Amino acid sequence: MIQKKSITKKTIIGHVLKSTVAISFCLSNNVIADADKPQSYAKAPMNAYNSQMDDALLGNKYEKPVWNLHDTLNLPEWLSAGVEQRTRYESIDDVFRSSSAGVSQQVALQTSLWLQAKLGNFRVATEVMDSRALDNVGTHVNGVVNGVNNNMVDTADFVQTYVSWADKDVFASNIGVEAKVGRQTMDLGSRRLVARPIYRNTVNSFTGLRLRVLEQDKWTFNGFVTMPVVHFPSTAVAISNDTTRFDQEATSTVFSGGILEGYNLFMGVNSELYLYNLNEADSYNNPTRKRRYFTPGARFYIKPSKGHFDFQAEGMGQFGTVKYNTTSTQDQQHEAWSEHAEIGYSFDIPWSPRFMLEYDYASGSKNPSKTSTQDSRFDPLYPASDVDFGPTGIYSGFQRSNINSPGYKFNFAPRTDLSVTVQQRLIWLASASDCWGGSACSSAGTLILNPTKSSGSFVGNQLGLTSRYNFNSSLNFEAGWYRLFKGQFAKQGVTSSGTTVPGTDSDYFFVQSQLRF
Image (cartoon, rainbow, N blue to C red; front, side, top):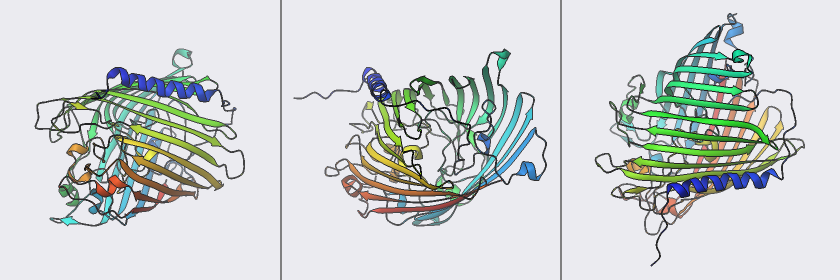
C-alpha cells in the first residue's frame, strides 16, 4: 500500500523558496540590467484610475489627460478633480460552466468621480464609483437574471475616502513616508493577492491604516491593518430590483500584513518579501467562511527591456483554518501553495514585439468533502485575476485556485497608439478530485463544476486576442475575443444539482471605451 504524502507548512515554505530562488539565480546569469532611460509615463489602465495618477511620494505615474477638469475649470493647484467613464459590451455565445446560463450578454458601465485637496503635507480625498450592468439577456428566475452579482453592480458608492500625510524627504534623510487613514484601494506587489481589479466592474476597497516608507529606487515597505469593504446589496434579487444600499466594512474581519520590495539588488533583479494575515468572522448580513490564513510569499523579477531577457518567479504559501460548511463547528486545517513563473524576451526591432512563456500553479484539495478535516485549495485573497488568466466580467473563467496551467503571450505594437496581444493557455486542475470555480466553490451553488468518475483533470485550451487603441490620453478603446476549447472536465463535470453542461466550446467577445477628463 502506497502512503500519500501530505502537505505541511514545511513543504509549503520549501516550495516557495525553491521555486523562486532557484529560478531567479538560474536566469540572472543570462540577463542584462536595464539601461538608464528617461522618465516616461505608463499607459493608464482601462478602468477608473484617477486616484493613482498623482502619487504623493513618486509623482505622476500616468500622463495627464489632454481633456481635464482641472484646466477646463481653472482649478487651483491644491485641488484635483477628475471623471472617468468606461462602457463595455460583452457577450458569450455558448454555455460556459453553469454560471453563464444566466447572462449571455451585458453592457457594463463604470463611472468614477475623483476629488482631492492638498493642504501642505496633508491630503483629503474621495472617490465615488457607480458600477452598473444593463441589458442582461439569459435565463430568468422569478424575474431575476441569473448570474448578476456585486462583482458587476455596485451603484453610487464611496470606494475611497481617506486622509493622508506624506513627506518625500523626512528630516532630510532621503526617506519618503506616507500614512493613509480611511477607506482606500490597494495594489501590492504583483497584484496577484491584493489589488484594485482593472477589468472587473467593481473594485476592492479596505478601511483602515496603511503606512508606506521608501527610499527612491532602492526599497519600499508597505504595511497595513484594515477591514475589507463588502459590496451591498449582495443578492441577485436586490441587484435586479435596483435596490440601493451603501457598502459596509466587515467589522469582524481584519486583513493585515506587510510587503518589502527591493530594487536592482544584483544584475537588475528586483525582489519582494511579504506576509499577509486574514482573520475573518461573521458580521451583520455578511456570513463568511471564517478564513484564518497566513500567506507568506516571495517574488524575484527583472522588468522587460528591449533587446534583453526578463523573468518573474513568485511563490506563495498559505496555512491556517477555514470552514466551508457554515453550519459545522469543525474547522478544516488549511495548507496550500501557489507559484507563477515566466520568462520573456523583448525584441529591439520595429513594432516592439515581446514573447513570453508563463506557468501558473495553485493547489487544490485531494479530498474536498465538507466532512474532511484537511483543505489544500489555494485562496487568492483579494486579487486581480485578469493579471494572468484573462478577462473577468461574465467570462470569469479562471482564478488562482486548483489550477495547473502553462501558456504564452505575444505582444506587439504596429503603431505607438496601437497594441496587440495574442495569448494561449492550457488548463488542467491541480487536483482532479476538486471542483472548478474558485476558492469558495464548495459553497458556491451553481457557479461551479464538480468532478465525476470520468471527468479527468483537463479543463480546456484558452485562446485570446486583444487590441487597444489610444486616441489620446483621454480616450482609449479596446476589443478582445477569447475562445475556450472545452476539455474533458468542462464537458463531463457536473453542477451542484448533478447535471452536466453542454459540451460546445465557448466564445467570449468584448469591446470597450474609456473616457477620462
